[in-house]
Amino acid sequence: MKAIINAKVVTENSAADGGILFDERICEIGDIHAGGAEVIDACGAYVIPGFVDVHIHGYKGFDTSDGNKSGIENIAKALTSNGVTAWCPTTMTVSMEDIQTALDQIGELMQGGEGARVLGANVEGPFINPEKKGAQSAEFVKKPNADFIIKNKDRIKLVTLAPEVDGGIEFIKRVTAETEVNVSVGHTAANLNLACAAFAAGARQVTHLFNAMPPLNHREPGVIGAALTDDRVYCELIADTFHINPVLFKILDKVIGDRLVLITDCMRAGGMPDGEYTLGGQPVSVRGIECRLSDGTIAGSILTMNMAVKNFMDAVGCPIWEAVKKASLNPARSVGEDENIGSLAVGKRADIVICDSNINIQKTIISGSLAYDCNRQIV
Ligand SMILES: [Zn+2]
Image (cartoon, rainbow, N blue to C red; front, side):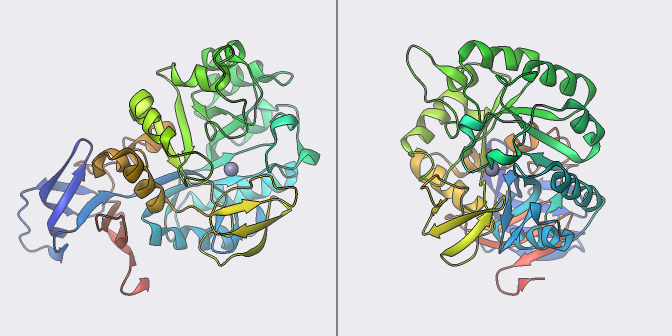
């Protein structure tokens, strides 16, 4: 048994002085009795639930689609330094063979491994609209293939789909009827009616709201209008302040609160110096927080989850627990993992992060074991 004492403990709806007692799971929160437990003194720091990043391609030079299982393992380990304790390795629009290779590797890592737990894949493409491909490769765009998703349902959490492409709505109906996979509307030119039809058919997420879709127009509110007004739908947001003007963080906080899911959409240049990298096989230049293809198209980000939470908190002026929830419980809910992870609650996995008020990560604990310590680097 372990105990963190002298902390500000962030639960679903508050931050309160106290401690937390845990083994692999959380046993007690608040005014705890440490007894013979191994004690960690937080010295007044925050204790928050580990972050859940459901949309991230790579980090520290590695990419989910490299065809290299050890690369995905390296990402999992490195993400603990950002307070991430669970993630969905996200594939790009590459060949079906390369996607299958990544899914097989992700399936193996779901059985257990070091670092942030692998929940299952996020398949971002190839079932997209080439007109809204963003930094995805048009060469590999495919018609929706429900059989492919159903065949791999045990290793997929999310799949992006443009509902306007041939067979799009049928795909949503089949995938949501036959699997637990959440269909995310994205890389799409769908209008309001079609987006509403996609949600009625069972889609429950939107891939990076505002990016790679038509803007919110007052006569044709499109996917954004449909998503903001449908209480069943989770909306991903890249909160790096570059993809989205932070004034929109404030609007989204007021309008969709608990349906907002912070993501990083990070590519392999995350945690690396400025320079030349690749994303889904295409060259990308990284300067500061901007990642671009040679034609100027924005290509992923180098955002970290702790920075996303800080950016959101700073822009909105909300308490820490409100911002943290959008990076932990809300994403866990969007992929059906909230009974197990996503908040500090008795009985849930002891995925716990100690950080300061600027969300600088001090320690990351996964299933009760120390996975990262800022004083010792990755342990
Ligand atoms: Zn992405």
